[in-house]
Length: 255
Image 1 (cartoon, rainbow, N blue to C red):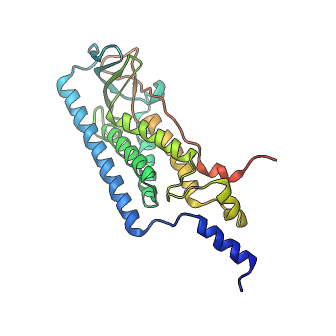
Image 2: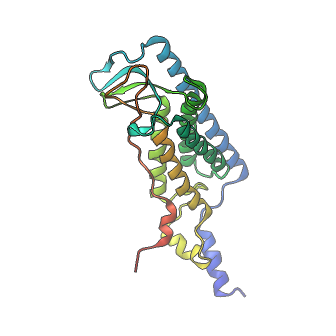
Image 3: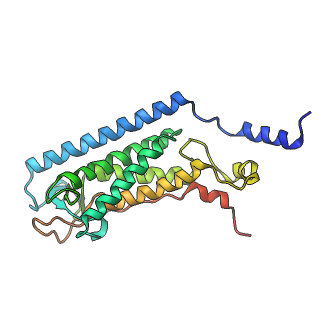
């Protein structure tokens, strides 16, 4: 005869989504890597085209009136004109973000997180390649930016991928969906995790990746559209949307 505690544990397990199979996890990892490779290829090919077809720091070529144009600049800094003289520090930060994403991919159980991490990884690596391989030298390279958004800032394909990933991660975190694909809500926490006082690992990982997305977006591209300095690049500037870590749901409302 089962005890009430055993019955409660069984009932709680029945309400939770099953963990993804190993084959499903492998498929998500492959899909994430393929998406990252696609973003990286698109970013580098469009940068190659921009350098071949455009003159650095020339006037903007309108594409959609005054809303969208094309203008080639070389960007040594981060978002909002931050740390333009410390490119090597930004390179280290982006490298750490990339390593963190690669480690997180192994715990994937959600197609939404797979899409977000694929976009984030591809965008971060795209701009990291510029910092490592372009002038003026290793780890101090300037990022190629050429998409002018109404004169407010100039970005590239990698920036678009990073910002899209940040928005996806914010939505997933607000919905309480962890890296493993499970939805971590206050009800789930009350049924299961409250007994051992520990938040699920995937929820903690989701919150940490949200922070990594913000860090990666803040340092990986998007130069200010005003006050360009010839041959010196423009500091980056781009809005970034961060996520609310799902692990905060486990804390409950203050008494």
